[in-house]
Image (cartoon, rainbow over all chains, first blue to last red; front, side):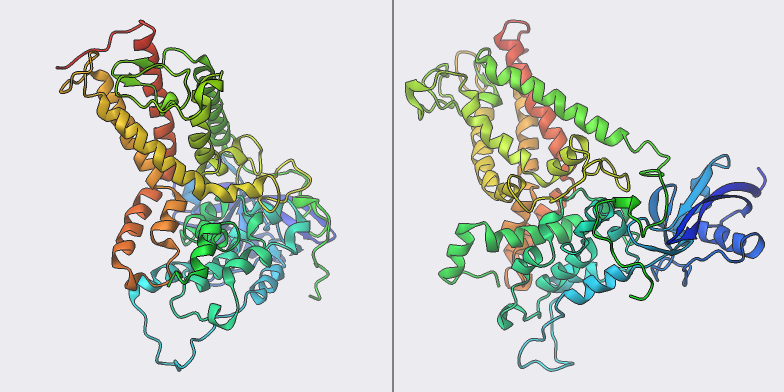
Length: 257
Length: 273
């Protein structure tokens, strides 16, 4: 079989005023990914096609898009996963406002990032003096693999299908951030009066999550967002708000150190 | 933001004004509907079967086998099961099938289970039907208010499920008797019960609430090495929670059906010794 062929693409072109899917036929070579094809379109047929990209290695999280309706990184989607007869549809992320062509305004995510209170340094421990056991920090480190591609935010139906929930719901990426900090062995938020378990529900909308696991399915870093961050965070919120036994235990001094 | 793309407070979802103008609710080309359809069909089949068996109030005991749907049997109208799980806690006023009393607990455990929630939210409520496929509902409040806020009681159903699993373990031990209640015997039903109880325990212990209780709630694993190991063990099971949920659902129905076949005389339990 020839290593080069002509593929059919539909790429969304437009801006906030409107737009449509535009048909292209474009050359594909062995080993290429969707982002290569989008670049070839720019070079040969659509020089004004807007696309956000940077590393081409699945580490910068810039080239998030929806390919055949599924949120994916364009640079990590091999053309070999599609048949040669298939028409491949590429659209911008459909949860965020579009700016132009494949570029969306992901400012919602930066807004939500700012709403999560930062790591609280432990009292009396200066920079360079932090000491942790690996087993204590393993859980938080899994979440640090996040490349901020926002595919989990894009696929989450809480905001994807309900624009009105964007105010109340931080989304899986930033609930994972809350979990990361609450599980961090040196985070002193509780000592400073900040209860991350309660605020996860009260201020970041944890209750909106109905754990349907789409965030985990689309994560290019294979972070177990639902099982390792969101559900443990829900259980921690239950400790604070719905479990009288845990409440009683905390009152008589049995805390979870 | 100066882009003119500030969020609009409407419920248009993927068709909201500021988003890319695409009329289709989704552009997926794979068979995204297959998983929720299969899930809904499987759960529906179990609900129909278990409803029939729970209300039948018959053919649930064939010595030495007790149907897991009727164990423990907590009313006076239970059949007398020699050495079996009879406990007349409800007395004589309970008139309908005694299975209803006990099934509330495993039913509650599975209804509030984090895996089954995903399964039925997707399969029955289409919220969402599949990832990046638009859901049909105009409003969504998730588990923030009644009745779904009650999902937070999952850990209490987990405690009850431990007691039920303990009772079913006792029932499995009883299957090493013969029909005259003499010990040291085994039949095909014993294997069915053994398989079932292994899967029931594996599913129960793989629960997310169990994972939290044994160690997940801790901040410093290094100070609790035993609980850390328990958390790791439960975590390994937890990674297969969906598989165990289905396997134990099938096995419990199979164990009940086996008892039904033997008790109704359709089938003779082959005895090994």
